Amino acid sequence: MKKQLLNTLNKIALYSLLIGITASCSNENYGDDFNKDQYGIYSANYKSLLAGAIMNFGQNGGDRSNAYQMMPILFSQYQSQVVYTTEQTYGDTPGAWGRFYANQIINLNEIISAYSNNPSPEILLQGSAENMIGVSKIFRAIIMKRLTDTYGDAPFSEATKATSDIFLPKYDTQKTIYEGIISDLKSGRDMLNTTSTRPEGDILYYGDLNKWKKLANSVLLQATLQLSKKYPSATGYAATEFNSALSNSAGVIEKVSDEAWFTISPGNSYPNPLSDFRPADYRISRELVESMKGSGNAFNRTSNHTPDTRLTLYANSGTMSAVGLPYGYNSNDLAAAGYSTAGVTTISVKFRSNSSAINLMTAGYTYLNRAEAAAKGWTGEAVTNMLTQGIILNYNTLDTHYVLNTDAYSSTNPFGGTKITPNAAAYASARAADIATFGAERVIGEEKWIALFMNGFDAWAEFRRTGYPALLPAPSAVNGGVIPRRLRYPIEEVNFNNSNYLKGIQGLMPAEDKNTSKVWWDQ
Image 1: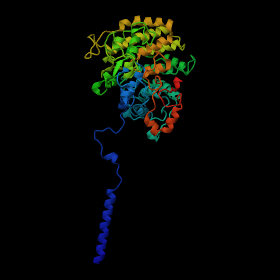
Image 2: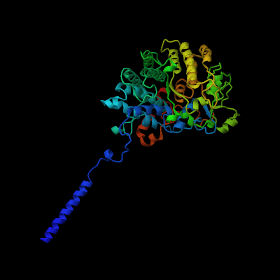
Image 3: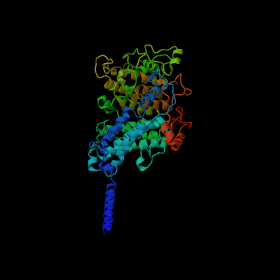
Image 4: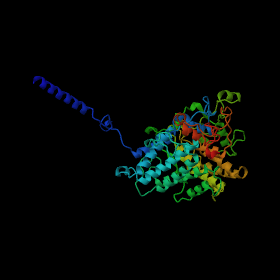
């Protein structure tokens, strides 16, 4: 009996131990109950996603932002490099598009998805479905235009769909992407409803939906003109879409007050990205300076022969006596050519301080796009009137954003100086007269170059499409002497998405991943 009792007690103890072990090893969802920051956010805040996408695009637009941001500015020959000359001599290094997708498009796609699927009342407090989706579509189109203009074919329809188990997205053709851009701009614009809850997180227009509509139409003018080499006819796809946007009841950007400018705020960790560049490494280019002076020497790359007082705002001298540095030389070749960096100036602090304003779309540029469309015969508008308005409005907006007081301009008062608007009409008249001698599209293309100063991505896209101004390749070029037509695909795509990367290359001419290959609309 004693032995039998002992065996029974041992079994009870063993069973109790097993029950304890089983209970202690039960499945737990640690994501729900453990290791959480009690102050953390674990669900999407859609206004923050929208603000983050706008802010991130305004600051840099791509990983490795410093070099990436500066390359289009150098390709457009607004600045010259002094010592480190890899970018201006066209070193063919891979680009970067990580932030376009990971910090911008994924935010906007998340908003579009959430507001398209029976959004909760709490979500709708951040903006009505039509307004959150509409603004997100418009801004996504703006981002995709920059991305595809820079690289060519790229992920779009399958981009940022890791939640659908698409980790290696296909490359859509640039033609397909542009059709998507135009569709997004139109559908986004038409969704906007001024009578419903305005979108929170809108740090571009702060809920002014009428201005968003004008922005969408103005970007449509820009995007359709970018297709003019593929669809040149006045009755073709590009011209038809251009006229549809121009005649839309919402209108286009025609006043400085309707323009889209990023809200640069260093105190809120939102500085102008150009402030990261060391001024000692750059000078304003001699090509730009002599073109704006209207000089008769070989450095003038335009047909202009009239002094353009926008130079007093662009150059750090604050005067028309600025001296630029010849573009595209390495240091040895610069000395061999008889030039030096002595006495040359940088670009104005107005454009490179941490609080300097950055534009996304201006009235002046919109009028210059209308001038070009008129010159192509796409519209019945008067070319000279559109050109004149474009130039005058560019003077106006420069005064509005860069001349904020009448005290003398200096490094400690970068936004002081003399207004240039009083000189605008005379200069515009002279340039309109130049059309008779040099042709409308040349003069308009040159004026776009001046108006887009330091807006490198748009200026570079315009130059590649139109050939204006008549920029020459860097004398010290290392790529065979070709002003880059694109950036190479990111190295991550070569390594991890190789099969789709190889298909994307087939859209280039020649089909090689080089900075000399042309994207579809440039072929």
